[in-house]
Length: 383
Image (cartoon, rainbow, N blue to C red; front, side, top):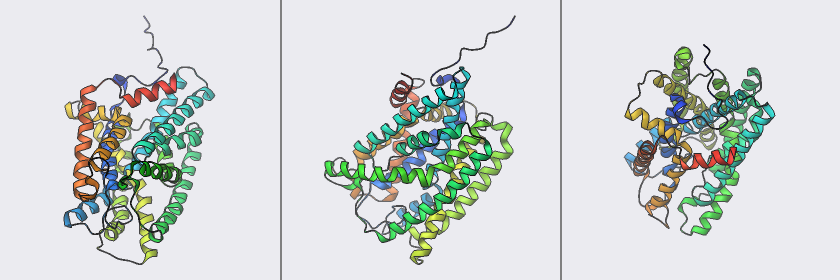
């Protein structure tokens, strides 16, 4: 007696059938995103390359140093790798239903276009440093790499690394030469802040695309083809190598900028720009290392309340990401809570951790239903 195969899924994967590792990675990644963004809402202090106060107290400088080594420039590449991984998963599900590649490509581009719209709205209402627009842009422009040969994907990733260094070096020179002013998050006039957020977003989105997300996105595409995170036991040696080497490269590459931004070392401008570019490019290795570490953990973890809560947060990653900005504006903005001018980097990071925990608890309580942002994106994508 033959058993009929399960019916193909035309839309998003049902929550109960999702692999643990990608969702766990997204849930933990959101902690890094919160830590990387919270201090961007502060103002009233001279800031270094990564936006941390140069005149902070000992605890503030300690927190800034740790985050420069382990968080800044590491969370964004991890997010990009997971985005590329998820795009391949989505394409594979669509192809498994019998749809042609042109039909699947149209779905991926429609989803990416709506993600770009989500990013625009996020910047319009909440946060100038939005990253959704960059992922929407990369989905629109590079969707063809989902079907390209491995050698083409890896060569494009290497070209992306070179472009990454060039763009970030230019951005570092601009950081040194341009006059420093308050970010849109620190502006007291809500209308002025809105205008400046959109101006900033329109410039940062293509910069993120060109300088930060392409290489990690392509490495994520390569890994998804092999189901590395779904089958971590089969790829344990690879994951161990990526986790070990990537972490070492990220820490070594981030150490010089940590010394500069905490004022333990004051090199020439040319050297400072060079270590800024080094920090950024080695952050790609750090982002991939974090994804590998979580893949290794997922292969050993049993389902428990903490694991389920983190995975639920990963399933709600778009909603939780947007909710972080809602909370940060309510707490830090001058026209809301006003803490942006009254706390330092250490306190901002503490608020970031609490914010992330709130989103984890919320997602866990409302699981297995989809987050509102995920549900909206799914409906807009599939109709």
